[in-house]
Amino acid sequence: MNLTKNKIIVSILSIIGISLFIFLLYKFGMDALKIIKLNINFYYLGLFVFIVLISFIPYVMRFKVILDSYGTKISLLTLIRQTIAGASISYITPASRLGGEPVRIYMLKKECNVDYETGTSSIILDKFVEIFGSALYGIIGFILLISLIGVPLYFKVIFGSIVLFGLGLLFFIYYKSKKEKNIFSKLIKLFHLDRFSNLKESVSKIDIKIGDFFRYKKKILLKSFMYYLISGIFFIIQFKFLLLSIGINASLFQLILIINVWGLLNFIPTPSSLGFLEVGQSTLFNLMQGNGAEGLAMTLLLRVGYLFVACIGFLFLTKFGIKEILKNKLIK
Image (cartoon, rainbow, N blue to C red):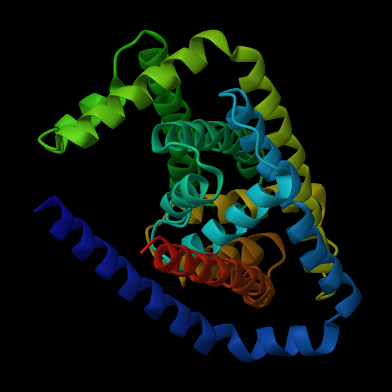
């Protein structure tokens, strides 16, 4: 029943997203295309794509130090390839921040012989660091948002509430895991998945691994977070070059707000936040610059850049799939 409800919610949100996207194209589409056509700078656009690709290094190092702490040594290039493959899946699925993670776990098992419990625990911890970093980013964004004239009070309250809720949830997970409360085992029990004995046993091992990590590997957690901070700087550089490619010289203040809105809308369960991202950025640019078309122009180019990365990811997935098929045939 829960799965059916989730599918209905995702379907409704996807329809709303598509409708919003069409509406934004109707309202600002021609102006956005005109902005791109008159101001496009391929030098800065190329730098944007380059920085997007380079930013996978600190992004993956954040995960690698966690994985290494479990005694699993895997080359950085292998993990980058697997991460880009996972990101390509995330981009086309409703769970934009989680959709590709099962693929990464599977590739870790098949290519690097990392057991599912270790792979899953490492990715959960990696996501913990990412969301914690995003929440801290959100606090900075919220402080800046308060000073922005013209933003409705209810929007500031909603934004601030989401950031506080995220931090509270992370603290809850950290505290319960550290105190051996088996939070993930209780979660599968809540969704009546504990009847599957294999799943129950695996989740119990994951609880132990995550609890041990929080208790005994605080330095690794801090090191992983430091890599997140580096990737956060890369995000700012990415958007700086993206906006320069269409003739917009955004301030640090504006860049942080743009990234916060982008990050927040990524949690909406629709493929690549279609429609919602466009509305969010167009609204923000209307408040900051008085021109919503600039926000739409930026998101259109952003999608082109990320689609390019997604295509690279699908090439990696295709190669991986062919290798698995050949391996299975040889075994038979």
